Structures are given as C-alpha cells and as structure tokens.
Length: 209
Ligand SMILES: C[S@@+](CC[C@H](N)C(=O)[O-])C[C@H]1O[C@@H](n2cnc3c(N)ncnc32)[C@H](O)[C@@H]1O
View 1 (cartoon, rainbow, N blue to C red):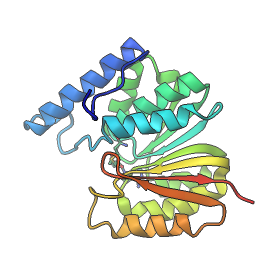
View 2 (cartoon, rainbow, N blue to C red; view 1 turned 180 degrees about the vertical axis):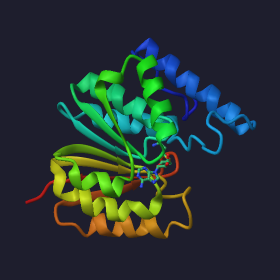
View 3 (cartoon, protein in one colour; view 1 turned 90 degrees about the horizontal axis):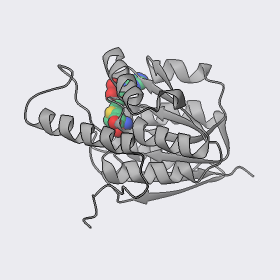
C-alpha cells in the first residue's frame, strides 16, 4: 500500500464516496476547472486527514474547533471522527461561498448534524466562542496562526490536542508558522512535536499544571 493511500478499513461508505468526490474536484481544479471561481481547495490531503481523524477519535466526546473550513475536506475527516467519538465540530471560514459549499458536502455525507459552520473572520469570532475545546485544527491564513492561538488558548480543555498544518511547506516563507510554533512551545503545560506528514503538522498537547 502506498503511503498516501486513504485507509478505508471500516470507513463509512458515504464518507468514502465524499472523499472520492473531493479527489475528483481537486483533480479538475488542477486541470483548470475551479469549483468556485477565484477559490481553491487548499485541502490538508489524505495523510493529514487520517492523522487529525485518529487524534480526534482518541478523545472522549471531543469538542473540535477548526480554523479554515475552505471546501470542507478537513471538516469531513473531523466530522467523521466526531460522529465516532460522540463529539462535535465548530468550523470557521471567512468566505461565505466556501462555507456553503462545505455544508452541502457534509450534508451529502450524512455528517451535517456533527458540524456547526460559522462564517466570518476567525479573529472576530473566536472571542465570542464559549469553548472549552478538546481539539483544534489550525489551517487558515498563516499570519493568523499566532493571534488565533492567543485567542483560543484560554478556551482549551486540559488534555486538548492542537494540530497546525503547513508547518514545513505551503503558506509563505514559514515565518508566521515559526512564530506560532515558538509561542506554542513556550506556553507552560504545552508539549509539541513537528510531524513530517503532508505539508508538516505541528501536534501539541496542553496539560496545564
Ligand atoms: C488552507 S485553507 C483551509 C483548508 C481546509 N482546512 C481543508 O483542509 O480543506 C485556509 C482557509 O482559511 C480561510 N481563512 C482565511 N482567513 C480567515 C479568517 N480570518 N477567518 C476564517 N477563515 C479564514 C480561507 O478563506 C481558506 O479557505
């Protein structure tokens, strides 16, 4: 089995179909047929999808926060994990057209009950979210990683897991990602490691003393 092949053992058939749909639309986008004019998927990809799914599934009834829904690819993986673990996903996206597209895809996959879609600027929405959160996927614009971290840190439950994407490549020159990693690693109670999966995922666990 090739490393990037999606693990389908026991996967819900609707989830599998939804992933295949993403593969087809992303391939069409690469060939010059965008799903939404002027926007791209920028999806985390299958390996990172599997990683965030298995991390979230390991938690009990996880309250999942996603920053950067885009077309809903990573949301699909997280919602599938939320269904399996009895949790819920709250996902934030700046672009209304992307949010709407993602909601349709999640509905097709039968996962809409496990997701709340919020549209707008994460930096404005985060202060109003009650939390606590047990899992956070950080995957919006890279210069927002650090200011977002400062806003969601007080809302993390003990034992919360963070996964930040594009920590090795994708998304500028990496300065913003380095600033995020430095801040996370300097936070008391945070353990953090950079995994060379997909475009690089910084996985962190928060266990305040
Ligand atoms: C890399 S893409 C997310 C990809 C998605 N996680 C996936 O794997 O399918 C980043 C997304 O963050 C969104 N974004 C950018 N700035 C934002 C903000 N201030 N608040 C919320 N979302 C934002 C962009 O519109 C874009 O759709």
